[in-house]
Image (cartoon, rainbow, N blue to C red; front, side):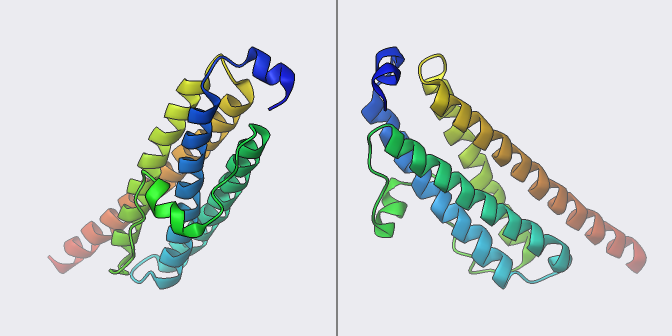
Length: 170
């Protein structure tokens, strides 16, 4: 963090770096959860959902880059060892042991909701104190809200498909 930034910031920078390292761990785990889930997923609408999950994975990787960059700007060190990700992350990684599309989507939905809370917390912590981090958190938060919406739409489409199949059987 530059001298002027330190002068105007009115927050605990070490706490912020801790919060950002937790977010960084969560972004890496979210990237992998999306990527591997898209690869192993089975079920109806797979061909429509897979590209969207891969896009979400790419966006999570972009979030990791933003967060790591901000940690460095603040004078911190991003997590250096992937083995630390699970212990830092407050949003759990859910192994896709059941590859059914609805299970994969529900796991990703839970992850998005946790990420939404993470970035709301960072935005609140930095509001009026560290505008650069605040702006980054809001940008990522908006992406996470869009991801949540996308997943909810897919789950609603799957539910409608199941209802249509039930009606056809009657």
